[in-house]
Image (cartoon, rainbow, N blue to C red):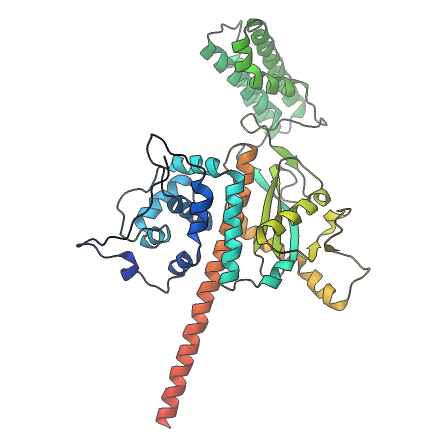
Length: 442
């Protein structure tokens, strides 16, 4: 079925329109009029086909909910609850009469993100850049000079330890075996749990020799369960397919060592990798890198790319700049980066690096000092948005969350611009009133 549409053309006799009751100077009210909603109707309407079934939710409603969610850093369930309580949110999503019921189930947000995918969210990010130009949050020439940097977006996993991973893999294998009707020789449920607890106690007490002994026990237990299951499913293609992923991860855990490459850090998020950014408070972070490109002057996000592999920063710069040019529709002339981008290999854009001496004038040196201005913008995306920890699943979830964080960051910046515009307008009006009163008195 094609998505249903929000019809506010007919008036209701006993209900007043929200557009006649709400404050027209409220920033969210103004922002609703600045968004070109027809772009989303045209782009996402093609994702649906005619046929039987329940009509999907209106496109403007779902896009508006995603925008509001990442402007305020809310979960899927929380945003639909707050939508009912806030008439400005309802007006932003296209409703002109007050609604008393939930607009959608929280799970609808998950299905909608998967339906439009990465390309759909890139169109939403491109529209926020266009809104920033329409509201004069940024000027077209500001898009030609950018700052690029990478940060870490952590996955929603527990801190990975050998004891936790080994014991968890054994528990999942035995649970899957029981569900599949396999009778194992031994599950090590009691011994495995005791060994995992003891390993944690010994690690806390810094008794590492005892701790390693318990970890070795857990590895033995996992190895025995793994080999037992492999013997039992031999010859059954259906069971081999069922156990393939989990057995593969269990075997990775059994062979990986401290210095192994391509280590496994989580069973439910195997795409997680370890990143060392040299931070004293947090030497190692577990998640994925996100490459960000923002305007040099305002910090407007032009692109946000989650990197599925732990690439060297210099190897990510060219594709990040090309994506920023694609979304903004502007050629980038200058880019400012830190020393981690040595050997970037970008030739069609002038790149200035921190600490660079050759070819630096006074004007460029002054602009180069502002390279670190991207850091507070990253901090805002983590504290006010959802860049600090990603709760979406898989490599696709990483890409979607990174783009949505950039969308929320741009919209918050546009709202601040609208607020500052009215503050200046009110101050000028008061100044003119005071001047008129002074002239009348004198």
